[in-house]
Image (cartoon, rainbow, N blue to C red; front, side, top):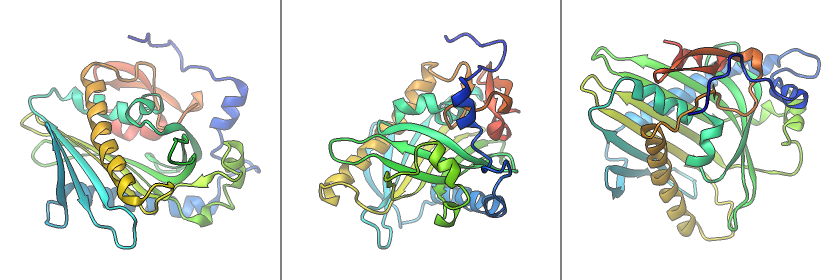
Length: 297
């Protein structure tokens, strides 16, 4: 296992400057982003929870691989349906909740469960805990170009009357009016050029530890346009397979103890002053202050 540092890891000066890109060039956060971010993040989380909990006939079961189910729901005007993968594992310890969540919320771990992931950057940190504007870079593949997704990030932990606990992470596409006030941050992280914008509208992950010990995991993605030269019906199969493989990889990593042992941060190069040590899945790690609401309990 990776040893726990005695202090938050220090970053190279250049990386520290990029990680601190949550402020505009004048040193002040954008007031437009600050005003809209809390509501947009709450709406992304609410939509994600609604889709995760929806058991209506609007969802169709399209694949069943072992314990993993894949569901899809048509999206009006989109090239692809919304996909939701689900996996339930019985008789799990309460620490499995944060083990899975820390794997999902680690930029380092994401490269394993998301084969297209390149890196993530923080564009503006929200005033409210668990909210931010982020950038996600996807690597080019033989059939798709490199893309950039600017999203509103939200994370939430809740406890039901039954005693079950739940952590939900959601990223919804940020409005384009965020581009001008965040242009310096976009340029600093390498997204200010001609890189193609992702057509992803929503990505989310949900993990619940029920009172009976069952651990329920779900992953959701909504992609609107086909960015590939291949026809949509071919890409549709790739998307479906990626949701099944992704949720399986998250669980296999968590079960095997391949969870963050040093830093838990959804974006790369979190500034050291925004890391706080806390207990996660039975160990002590440094967690981004933007994620503390979900882990520091």
